[in-house]
Image (cartoon, rainbow, N blue to C red; front, side, top):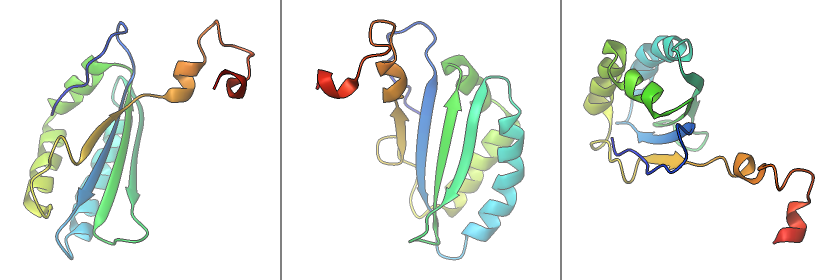
Length: 127
Protein backbone atom coordinates (compact mmCIF):
# COMPACT_ATOMS: atom_id res chain seq x y z
CA UNK A 1 0.00 0.00 0.00
CA UNK A 2 1.14 3.52 -0.70
CA UNK A 3 1.59 5.48 2.50
CA UNK A 4 0.35 9.05 2.75
CA UNK A 5 2.78 11.94 3.06
CA UNK A 6 2.63 13.28 6.60
CA UNK A 7 4.02 16.46 8.03
CA UNK A 8 2.84 16.36 11.64
CA UNK A 9 4.65 14.12 14.10
CA UNK A 10 2.82 10.77 14.39
CA UNK A 11 -0.58 11.89 12.99
CA UNK A 12 -3.71 9.76 13.05
CA UNK A 13 -4.16 7.68 9.88
CA UNK A 14 -7.62 7.35 8.32
CA UNK A 15 -8.12 4.94 5.43
CA UNK A 16 -11.13 4.08 3.28
CA UNK A 17 -11.13 1.05 0.99
CA UNK A 18 -13.77 0.61 -1.72
CA UNK A 19 -13.94 -3.05 -2.73
CA UNK A 20 -15.90 -4.58 -5.62
CA UNK A 21 -16.23 -8.36 -5.44
CA UNK A 22 -17.14 -10.96 -8.04
CA UNK A 23 -20.89 -11.70 -8.18
CA UNK A 24 -21.93 -14.07 -5.42
CA UNK A 25 -18.62 -13.93 -3.52
CA UNK A 26 -19.51 -11.38 -0.86
CA UNK A 27 -21.26 -13.71 1.61
CA UNK A 28 -18.16 -15.93 1.69
CA UNK A 29 -15.89 -12.89 2.08
CA UNK A 30 -18.00 -11.50 4.93
CA UNK A 31 -18.04 -14.85 6.74
CA UNK A 32 -14.24 -14.65 6.95
CA UNK A 33 -13.89 -10.87 7.21
CA UNK A 34 -16.26 -10.10 10.10
CA UNK A 35 -14.43 -12.17 12.77
CA UNK A 36 -11.13 -10.62 11.64
CA UNK A 37 -12.65 -7.12 11.72
CA UNK A 38 -13.63 -7.76 15.35
CA UNK A 39 -10.04 -8.81 16.13
CA UNK A 40 -8.74 -5.72 14.35
CA UNK A 41 -10.86 -3.49 16.57
CA UNK A 42 -8.95 -4.87 19.56
CA UNK A 43 -5.50 -4.12 18.13
CA UNK A 44 -3.28 -1.60 19.86
CA UNK A 45 -3.54 1.63 17.90
CA UNK A 46 -6.88 0.90 16.24
CA UNK A 47 -9.36 3.73 16.81
CA UNK A 48 -12.11 2.52 14.48
CA UNK A 49 -12.67 -0.29 12.00
CA UNK A 50 -15.98 -0.44 10.14
CA UNK A 51 -17.25 -2.68 7.36
CA UNK A 52 -20.11 -1.30 5.25
CA UNK A 53 -22.08 -3.02 2.49
CA UNK A 54 -23.26 -0.73 -0.29
CA UNK A 55 -27.05 -0.39 -0.44
CA UNK A 56 -27.02 -0.04 -4.22
CA UNK A 57 -24.52 -2.82 -5.01
CA UNK A 58 -24.65 -6.21 -3.27
CA UNK A 59 -21.10 -6.96 -4.37
CA UNK A 60 -19.43 -3.83 -2.91
CA UNK A 61 -17.94 -3.22 0.53
CA UNK A 62 -16.43 -0.09 2.02
CA UNK A 63 -13.94 -0.47 4.85
CA UNK A 64 -13.29 2.55 7.03
CA UNK A 65 -10.27 2.47 9.35
CA UNK A 66 -8.76 4.92 11.81
CA UNK A 67 -5.38 4.30 13.43
CA UNK A 68 -3.52 6.30 16.05
CA UNK A 69 -0.52 6.57 13.72
CA UNK A 70 1.23 4.99 10.75
CA UNK A 71 3.20 2.61 12.99
CA UNK A 72 -0.07 1.08 14.26
CA UNK A 73 -1.31 0.56 10.70
CA UNK A 74 2.05 -0.89 9.65
CA UNK A 75 1.85 -3.37 12.54
CA UNK A 76 -1.67 -4.33 11.42
CA UNK A 77 -0.40 -5.11 7.90
CA UNK A 78 2.13 -7.57 9.37
CA UNK A 79 -0.43 -9.73 11.19
CA UNK A 80 -1.24 -13.17 9.79
CA UNK A 81 -4.99 -12.56 9.75
CA UNK A 82 -4.53 -9.32 7.83
CA UNK A 83 -2.46 -11.18 5.25
CA UNK A 84 -5.21 -13.84 5.04
CA UNK A 85 -7.83 -11.16 4.36
CA UNK A 86 -5.69 -9.58 1.65
CA UNK A 87 -5.33 -13.00 0.00
CA UNK A 88 -9.10 -13.47 0.29
CA UNK A 89 -9.64 -10.10 -1.38
CA UNK A 90 -7.18 -10.98 -4.11
CA UNK A 91 -9.12 -14.16 -4.84
CA UNK A 92 -12.60 -12.59 -4.86
CA UNK A 93 -12.22 -8.99 -6.08
CA UNK A 94 -13.29 -8.28 -9.66
CA UNK A 95 -9.80 -6.86 -10.28
CA UNK A 96 -6.63 -6.51 -8.20
CA UNK A 97 -6.78 -3.97 -5.39
CA UNK A 98 -5.49 -0.63 -6.66
CA UNK A 99 -3.84 1.71 -4.14
CA UNK A 100 -4.80 4.68 -6.32
CA UNK A 101 -8.39 3.73 -7.20
CA UNK A 102 -9.58 1.65 -4.24
CA UNK A 103 -7.66 3.06 -1.27
CA UNK A 104 -8.03 6.62 -0.02
CA UNK A 105 -6.12 8.19 2.85
CA UNK A 106 -8.21 10.88 4.53
CA UNK A 107 -7.69 13.89 6.77
CA UNK A 108 -10.23 14.69 9.48
CA UNK A 109 -11.06 18.19 8.26
CA UNK A 110 -13.08 19.04 11.36
CA UNK A 111 -10.18 18.07 13.62
CA UNK A 112 -7.81 20.14 11.50
CA UNK A 113 -10.11 23.13 11.94
CA UNK A 114 -10.09 22.74 15.76
CA UNK A 115 -6.66 24.24 16.24
CA UNK A 116 -6.23 26.44 19.35
CA UNK A 117 -6.31 29.66 17.35
CA UNK A 118 -9.65 28.63 15.79
CA UNK A 119 -11.45 27.35 18.89
CA UNK A 120 -14.70 29.19 19.49
CA UNK A 121 -14.71 30.94 16.09
CA UNK A 122 -17.37 30.40 13.49
CA UNK A 123 -15.89 28.71 10.43
CA UNK A 124 -18.45 30.30 8.14
CA UNK A 125 -17.00 33.75 8.78
CA UNK A 126 -13.58 32.54 7.68
CA UNK A 127 -14.64 31.26 4.27
